Picture 1 (tube, rainbow, N blue to C red):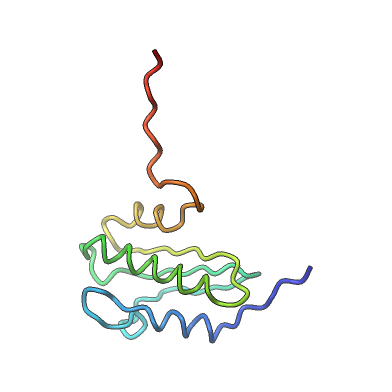
Picture 2: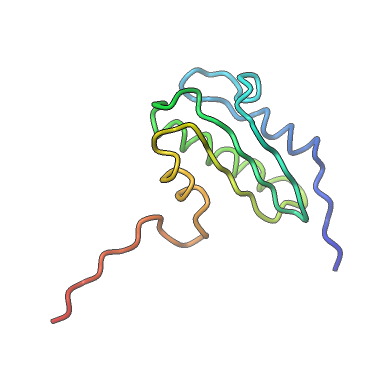
Length: 113
């Protein structure tokens, strides 16, 4: 079964709609996108935070907006988003890229009785 081609221009169009919620400017206009690769329906996006201490809620929102926006593009099967240059990057990346239906933090084990 052939893989449906993903239109790079449509991917770029979707990313250009993502706005930094703290400053109200599109992330593309702020040159935050460092990497954009598309291979067989899988999209990898890497971007950097505006500052190392950008509020984590805003960095997470940007990452989620990228993933949600790109998942709506025809032919996209999955999106992997990575933020760099942020003190909370590891947790944000883990949260936004977790498999559907899972939690980012493993549940606590209950003691055996």
